[in-house]
Length: 199
Image 1 (cartoon, rainbow, N blue to C red):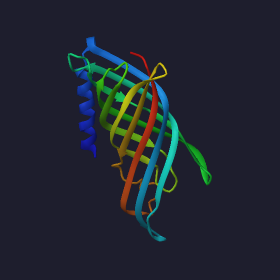
Image 2 (image 1 turned 30 degrees about the vertical axis):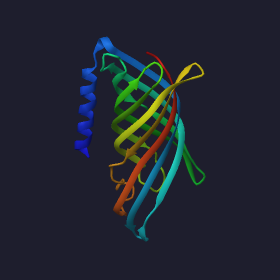
Image 3 (image 1 turned 90 degrees about the vertical axis):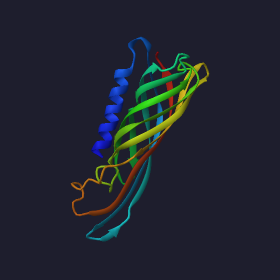
């Protein structure tokens, strides 16, 4: 897992260094996002073999920040260093409410008019913390892919995005030391709408 993250960080750093100061375009925005956390574990403890599953939709706010450069003479193709920090609220009738956070770092490719209509796709890594009960610390760390479109709406520019993070980290053994895990699948599927401004 460490090698994957090193590669992603190096790719993001090279992207940042390659951005020409004379062709920089900074865009940011705010919006709403729904993160769907998925946990599937298999473990053995004092009660025997267990296979808990949790799919938890968590609404929240998302912030967009991208630093782009033109990579074509027509200025319709951009490469960006992008992040979409997310803060959500997890509410459960059997447990205390908790804040949820996600921080992705992506290399993003955009085709179209960056101030109007276009499509984008990105790849990178994300860290998220949910503290969903019975699944260790609720942390998901792993690669993320994302894609979406940007379009005009009522005189403004809106971005609609989808993303998926595949969790590479193991369950928190320190949280449940009595458990012996045989399998743990973790992931996040997210959908967001963002009002874009800046540039």
